[in-house]
Length: 80
Image 1 (cartoon, helix red, strand yellow):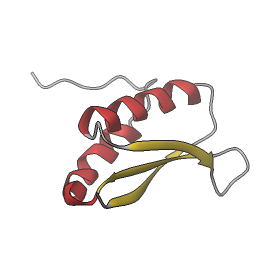
Image 2: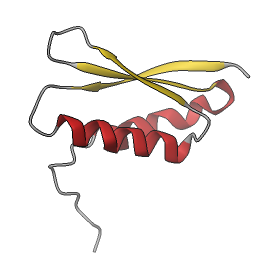
Image 3: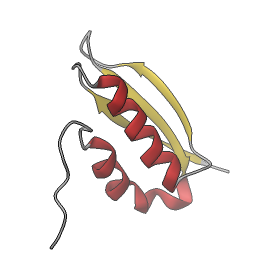
Image 4: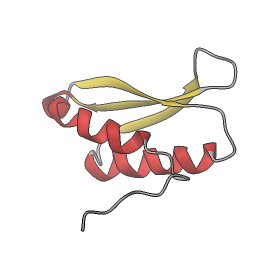
């Protein structure tokens, strides 16, 4: 199987561990066959989640990455 390498930026902050957990749950919830790794970001305090997702499902990534970027400290609004 061919994989595409995608990234989610995890910025430094008090809820960084929660953000990593949320992003991993979102990615693996959509792509159970994904391979995840946490790596150093470009700035000293930033991290990246490197996600290897199946190439055949690359079109699903934009929606997944948007959900993975939502900070767990920010409440989500619900539609009424």
